Length: 540
Image (cartoon, rainbow, N blue to C red; front, side, top):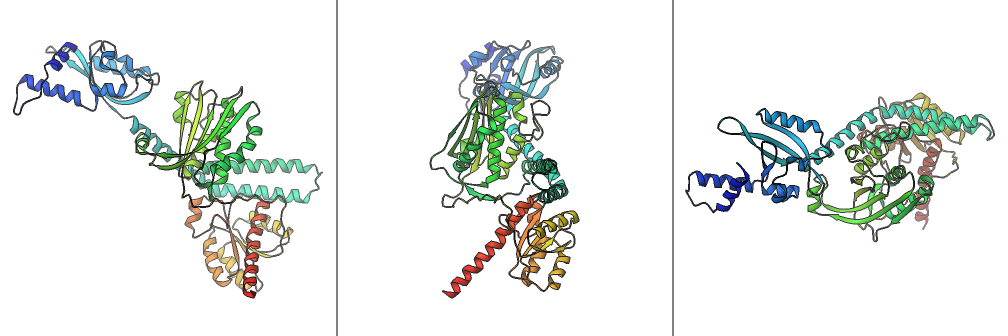
């Protein structure tokens, strides 16, 4: 069926009358069906020269019928499609068989689209191939959604793996760093071993960071959620960036006016900015420009149609743009995968962007990347906007000196080495310490001890009785006691143990002993302030 035949049919076309039949009428029905079909239809001669395309083809590809007819099917060929596929396709149809496959094609404007394609040979009365008819359905949106879901499943799998080993690994790191801190406290400042201890602590911190990154991009990391103004976070981070990325990179911050608030972890959003800035620095080895922008955006239904995984609504946009080398098109689909890197061996772990992805997803947000080789890259982070009347939380910085105390602490920890190092630290800093290896032992010790117990520091997950069960029973017997929960497990595991205030009464292992000392004073001094306020109120 050649081009001239289609032109003749189109010229003679008229609306069908009811009950009208016959070869001409059936031909017109077929013509109308092909013209109105949503799927792409293309007919070529035996050599692949196009003789016909339907309107759906024109709509999707951007080519008009006049531009395509007389060209070969290679006009849609994409550089992202391997040449072996075309060889397989032609070998199949020239043998008289039907080819079915997924093909990545290119539109007139250079964009790529993914086609679920069927190529069928048309035979004459003698069984000879005269033409080929190609039909195809655009599955680009479906493939993008599948890729997003695949990434989510991959992150969940990595997160489950990370959370499975995090508890034991974090306890080991805690023991290493705790004893190193105790040794450093015992040595004079000028002692030669201080350098060695510093290296041990640095290695332990690197192990801690690695564990947390594994948990972050698996979305298993404990979060301290706060209502944040991203403009404030950007301003704080931008003051540190020149030392991080170098003075040969110009930093421009464009703060959105009347910016909405988001609910996120302050430290994690800082990490997102630092990781994206570091990534941008590596893309600009000869210097360049880094732009950080914030803005209120409303993603409507049309955006949600293009990005099916993103619900329409009000968001705060955080965009980080560099003027660097850009990302090769073949790498764009993999950049958020853990351990994927294009850097030289030893210069990248492949965790930076995977960590960013995990933080954004854990915060209920979405991230997209736009890049062209030689033209730079933009990462756009969309975080859900929270109610405007919610107040921004105040972020406090820990004290540099290690505070002391004189209260009685019940320390409940099932790891003997960790319990011993923590007990030694607390004793050195003035506290009276009672020890127990699990919740049941702690409960018996509390009932046998006649004096006051001011604070219980307890691991969350322990044999026999965990921290949550201990707190429930002990609080009924000692109403004035305070609790500090610690754990090396991931957030979901901790929350499954019972009602635990992870924002104010929890520390994620591994933590430094100095951090522990500060948290203890925060809890105990807060109780004393409340008691004084109640006493003053009663006298008044």
